[in-house]
Image (cartoon, rainbow over the protein chains, first blue to last red):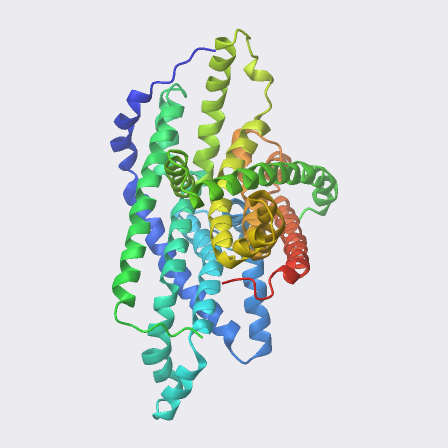
Length: 234
Length: 234
């Protein structure tokens, strides 16, 4: 076995891999929006009064947190079309990106729901009572009093969840989407694997840099948002 | 649904469960020990090592698991081989099973995440506890082992449980470096007759069961360790 590792070639691969960055960003942003919406629904069901809704919300979260994202991807991409075919629905025309967005939204929505529930519960009860006492309706109290405070509490966890979701987008290559990781694999197989280590290190550096930027944004947002606000946690 | 396939494949997939669990346990044991060391190094600001640890943790948290696995899988054989040459042994790289590379990548990942958990747990234990231990004549090691660590562990255990379940889910990615754990076995069995939906439903149920049992176990640990928590955090 020859040592063929050429670290000096690593930076050269970065621009080439970055050409797939828009695909990764597209997957990330759409999944993020859907997972936030789904997470909000699950949270609303989880903190509501109806017992059966609560049970559904809790089992949904437990299920999504128990299944590896890769298995969810396989289950939905390979399994769902088979299942759909048996009831007469044809899913063969659906693009791979749609499947990957669906999987990532589902798996991330459980984390989002947990985050939303925790920050909702962290807002002091007295805040709601105070809002009612000045005549606000339930929804107005939520929109103007509870939500702004819960959002401030949620920012660090939201940042973490976004970073996790971003890292999970790297699994899109599992079903052949050409995102950052898919691009890296394409480059390395074009050279029959001769430069695979350099290419994967280059991809790692891209993800690392992006995560550092995301983390910085999350810290910055938290600082700006919580400036001048009193901590309202119970 | 092909029930004949399920009956035939289920025992074979179950045979892979010990491999997944073995990988997780070894990685967690090695990773958490390293993580605790990193936490202590960063807490006491050991020069050079502390800065090195900070970069290591940031890298590990920013790079997706699947890329870490690939880097470990392609880089370690080169390192191992050239190390062997430098001490005059010709190591047969092909004799090293891929599970070794997977375990090393997973351990380093666990080290990074657990070090953050240990760090916040250690700083959550009141400073006065250490002073009190000194005042009754304990040495530094005694104080750490008998007073600080039990309390820190009680604080850390829920989060450790979280990353351990994440680790078990992460082992599904070892499929890409050729480890025949649950996911790879299911894939292999599903291929010939395209029994994807059956194979992945079984895999999902197995992972869900493992996560469920692990969550219960960590809940029990948490209850057991509760006695160390009473009024201990600052």
